[in-house]
Amino acid sequence: LPSILQTTQKFNSITMTVPQRPWWKDGVVYQIYPASFKDSNGDGIGDLNGIISELDYIRSIGVDVIWICPMYDSPQVDMGYDIRDYEDVYRPYGTVQDMERLIAETHSRGMKIILDLVVNHTSDQHKWFQESRSSKDNPKRDWYIWRPARYVDGQRKAPNNWVSNFTGSVWEWDEHTQEYYLHLFCPEQPDLNWENPETRQAIYKSAMEFWLQRGVDGFRVDTVNMYSKGEMLDAPVTDPGSEWQFAGYQYCNGPRMAEFLNEMNQILEKYDAMTVGECPHTRDMKRVLEYVSAKEKQLNMVFQFDVVDVGQGPYKFQTTPKNWTLPDFKRAMARTQDLIRSPSDGWTTVFLENHDQSRSISRFTSDAPEHRVAGGKMLALMMAALSGTLFIYQGQEIGMTNFPLTWDMSEYKDVDSSNYYKMVAARTNNDPKALEDAHVSLQHLARDHARVPMSWSTAPHNGFSPPDATAKPWMRPLEDADVCNATQQQSDKNSVLAFWKRMLQVRKQHNDLLVHGQYDDLDVESKDFFVFSKTWNEKKAVCICNFTDKKKDLVFPESVMGRKMDLLVSSVDDYEEKKLAAFEGRIYLLA
Image (cartoon, rainbow, N blue to C red; front, side):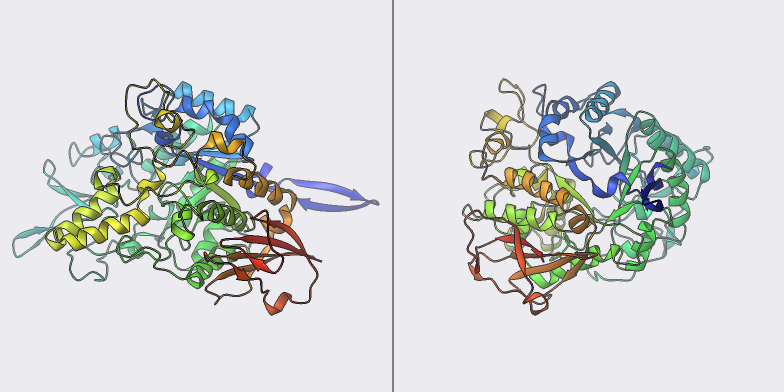
C-alpha cells in the first residue's frame, strides 16, 4: 500500500530500509466552511465556485490539504450536518459537477481535498429514514434505532434519560408507528443503526465510495466514536434540575467501535485515503491510542477536544469568559501531544479553531485592538512548533476575532446557541441577569463566531459577496474589516497572514523536529509562560510564549540553562534579547 511503501536507500552497499512517511503526517490542512467562505453569485451564501476562485490564495498560505465542511444536500437544520442525500450537493453551494471541478482544480495546484463524513446520523428527510419510519415492518425499519415507550404510572416515558447534544431528550416519539427513535443531536438527525450490517454497507457505498471514486483524498469523520451505542442504559444524574442527563460516556467508544472502524478502513486503504476522527468524551488516553495506532487500522488521527474545551462549564456555555488558567491549557496540550510519545505508533493533530469553536485570539489571548495581531502571531508560532498534522480554520490565518458583545442575540444563528439561550430563559423564568450572563458566555464561546463571512476586503459585505449582490450575507459580516482582511494582509509583510506563511515554511524546514519531535512541557505550573521543548534524535528546540499582556523578563527553565541557543524565529520584529513583549513567542534551536 502506498502509505507503507518501503523506500530503499543504498549506502556503501549496505541497504537500509526507511518507511516512507504517509502524506498526511506532514501536511497542513485548511478547513473551509462553504456557507461563509466566498459567495460567487450574490445570493448571500458561500458556494463551491467561490472556493474555486480562491484556491490560489489558499495555496499561497502554504497549506497542502483543504477540508470542506458538509456540502451535501441537506435541509440545513444543523448547517449541513443533517444530510438528505450523500450523493448530491446542497443547491445554493452548487452541484456534483461543481464538486468534481473543485476536486480537479485542487489537485492541479498540488493540494489534496478531504470531505466531512457524517454517518452517525442522517437528516430525517433522507429517503432511508422516510422508509424506516413508514411502518414497523418496513425492510429499512432496523436501519435506525427504534424503541417502544416505557410506562411509569400509566405515563409514557422515553426509553432512557439521555440528554441530546442540543438539549432535551435524545428520544423523539413517532406518532405514526407509536415508537421512539434515537437522535443524539437534533430530532431532525436520527441516528443510523450501525449494528445492522446492511446499513453499514449502504453507508460505505453512498457516503464514502461515491466520493472516493471521484478523487476525494480522505475524510474528517464526524462524531466517529458514537457508532456503537452499547446497552443504552440510564446515565448517572449529574444535572439534578433536569429530567435528561449527560450520557457521553454511555454512547461514546462502545463495544463494537474497533470492529466498525476496521471494516471502514478496508475501503479507505484501497484509496490511500486519510482519516481524522472527531473523538469527543474520551478521557481514557489508552482508548484514543487504540484509535490512532497504525497497527490497529482504525483511524489515522483524531481531534481531541481537551485544549479547546478548557474553561467550559458542565453544559459548555455554563461558564464565564477566560475561566481557565495557563496550566490547565498546558496539561490539555500535553495529553494530545503525548499521543505520539515513543513507543506509540499513533499520530496526533494540532488545532485551536474549527467551525465549532470561537476564535482563538479572543479565547486564548486578547482581541483588544493593541494586542490582536501579537496574539494571532504568537498562537501561529506555538501551533507551528507542535507535533502532528496541523489544521487551520478559514480566517484564522488573518487573525479574525469574535464579533462584539454589542451584537444582540438575533445575530446568533446557530441551533446550539439559540437552544442554550432558550434553556436559560426557561429555567430562570427569563431572569435578566441570567440571560445577560448567557449572552456574555455565548459572545466568548459560541460556534457562530467561526461562521461569520470571511473578511476578504473593505468592499461591500467585506468582499464576501460581489459588490452588486442583491441578497444580504446569511450572517452579518464583521465590522473590523478595515483592520483585518485577506486582501490587505497579502501585501503587508507585518500581517498575521505573512507570519503564518513564514511559520509554515519554518515548520517544513524543521519538519523532523517540529512535526515529528517529542514534546516536553518544561514549566507546567507557570501562569504566564508556555515553555516546551521538541526533541528529534540529537536535535532540540525550545518554544517559549508569553501568554500575558505585559512585557516580561525572559527566563528559561533550569533544564535548558547553560545550553547554547540560537533564535530561530520570534513573533515580533523588534524583539529585546532579555525580555518578552506582550503575547510574544519565540523558538530557539539548541546547539
